[in-house]
Length: 349
Image (cartoon, rainbow, N blue to C red; front, top):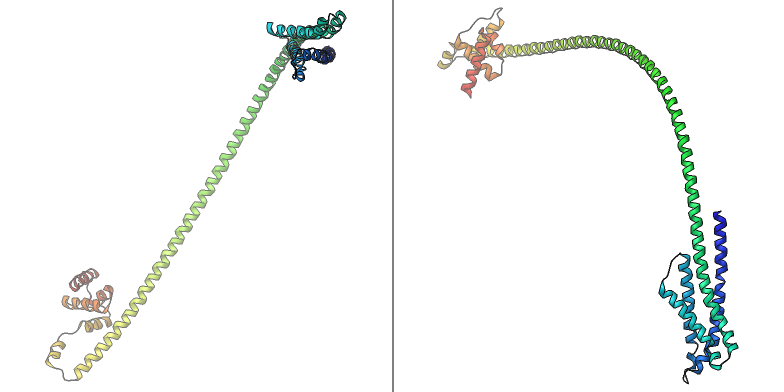
């Protein structure tokens, strides 16, 4: 229906466009008819301006017809002044066309020359009414179509509402049944999950206890191994220090024996040669080295006097012997020898 209406409107518009043929013919006829009249009333030398007046009037007619067609198609109302302009241009065109014949008293000419202007005026008015009638009819048809579409839309909505209500009711029943089954399945899965979780926790607890026990055993083994390693290392360090101390004591004993032997030989040499008084005085007191040498060869060390012991400490500081050697050679305790070493060291400083 909508396509048929649009086709009819298009056909009417095409037909109304033929009115421009009438307008064009009327304009051309008006220019040819009015120009001689205007030339006769135009001053000499201005005859070329005669066609301007009919062209201006006919242009006004064309503008009025064209704008009225647009306004009518838009279902508008131009008002008083456009209507006045339309009738004035029509009447001016009619007067100009019949003016020459009327001045000559030619009634036939008046009738002939009034055909085109009257036809133009009537065609413009008819075209305006036709377009307004077409616009009104199209609007009415559109309103009817809109009403039909609205009715169909309402019917479709009601049908969809009924179908949706039926679907919702069916869905509600299905959802209730599904929820019941899902609740039963969920309860069963939860029970199974709880059983599996309990079993996993038991398995994990047993595995954790086994790992902790194994880790404890491994830690104990590592601690025992570390203890053994530390003991072996301490024993090796202790043996290494003792061996070093023994080697150092042997080396220093050898050096002391060699030094004592040299001092003995030197003493024998001094005894063999005549000695001065100072030498005799000095020989009256045995040297600490001689005492040390003598005690070193005895099975048990003999405790020398304190002066001799202090002399031995002084000699040991000068010669670089250890406190242990001085204590072993003089028979004094290691504490006394250490104190003597400190006292002589402070005096020397």
